[in-house]
Amino acid sequence: MAAFKRKRGELLSVNKKAKKGKIVVDQDNGEQERNDEVIVPAPVSMGKWTNKERVLIFSSRGINFRTRHLMQDLRTLMPHSKSDTKMDRKDKLLVINEVCEIKNCNKCIFFEAKKKQDLYMWISNSPHGPSAKFLVQNIHTLAELKMTGNCLRGSRPLLSFDPKFDKEPHYALLKELFIQTFSTPRYHPKSQPFVDHVFTFTIADDRIWFRNYQIVEEDASLVEIGPRFVLNLIKVFQGSFGGPTLYENPGFQSPNMHRRELRLAAAAKIREKQMVKEMQKLKRAEQKEPTCNDVTADVFLTPAEEKPLNIQTEAPEPKVMKKNKHKLCHQIRSLIKNLGR
Image (cartoon, rainbow, N blue to C red; front, side, top):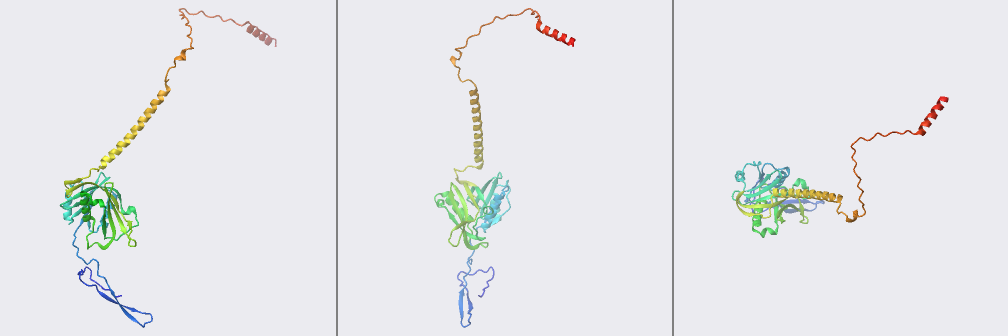
């Protein structure tokens, strides 16, 4: 089969016809020769890159290893993303708009770490807004899950949303923000012209659950790839990283308050155990003491006679010791016997 060479980076016009090549098939007996024409299809990515969406993914200082791996997984899945160095905690969030302008990015995913245990995610449309702040929970990275699913690096994903995103206005705003942030632009230079995985955003328990699945070619079934995490919405702002509040989640509870309630519950259990121990001690003490006095217990008791008290003012007379005559006779006899011997 003849190979047709095409210059690297050459863009073909849309109306350009596909090339035709000829293949000569030699039969074993050498009697017949047949020329078959094979049409080489035109390249898939011969369009023009018009959607210039770029996403800046970076974080603040103080993140742990799990957050760092999650950031790396998102950069791998999103070929239109860019990275930057960690931002100092003392800097204000409005500085991020300037960083996006320097990096030529119009979307931003910023991970903010607090107390080295709480992770917050900002998704913003820079520099005019809107922006949303989430609490990230239940993070599981690609290396940790070890799922059987797999997809091509740089391939474009499908975005699947829960029907609840169309029922409430703040969810509709988040849906449009997710579409512009997570969808890979068509004909992006770093992307592949294939669609082999899907990002799902599901609403359950007032939280947004993110999952990544592979689309199996044989039966179009889904196999999870990873990563996975849960977004708990806090606020939606009109501006980028600030501004008037468009929506505030009434059911959101801060991690500090949640930990405080856990400590109070543990302290209440300890206090209850101590009170139970004190009650048991009081019951044991009451059992030792007589509970009631029997009235008929003293019926058969007779009072003892009172003896007169004799007070001796003089010393008592010495007692005369009387010797036993029998003992003396016995001793004398024994002496006489001894002398006779």
